[in-house]
Amino acid sequence: MDNVGELSKGGTMSENMFLEPELEDLLSKLVEADKEIPAENRRKFIFHQAFQKGGGSRIEHPGLPGGEIQASLSNLEELERLGFVGSLREVRGVWEFDVTTEAHERYKQQTEK
Image 1 (tube, rainbow, N blue to C red):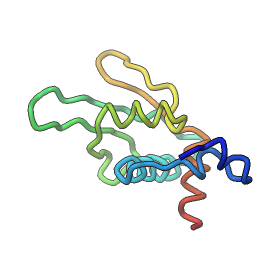
Image 2 (cartoon, rainbow, N blue to C red):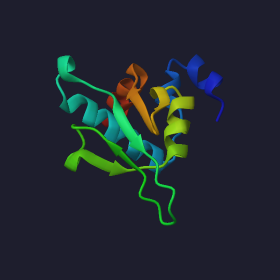
Image 3 (tube, rainbow, N blue to C red):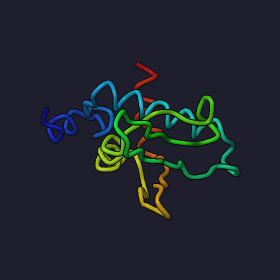
């Protein structure tokens, strides 16, 4: 897909960008979790990577159902590359990140369709 062409038609990059269903689902869960917490109490998401066979990598955040969801570092890195996850960095063996304004805009556009 030629995003430049799509932008010239009046859409935004995030609105017209194709995401694999797995990424779209993860992005939706992250934005919904972020919105669950009042702005003055928001905090970063925490990602724990499991190195054992079979996975177990997870994201923790008080806005997530049950406080955590399964995810992969590669999916988070892809969302960061696309501008939907910001400040992805490792701190003492875990990754911290937040969701961007672009992520909230994408979520709003996708849920209004």
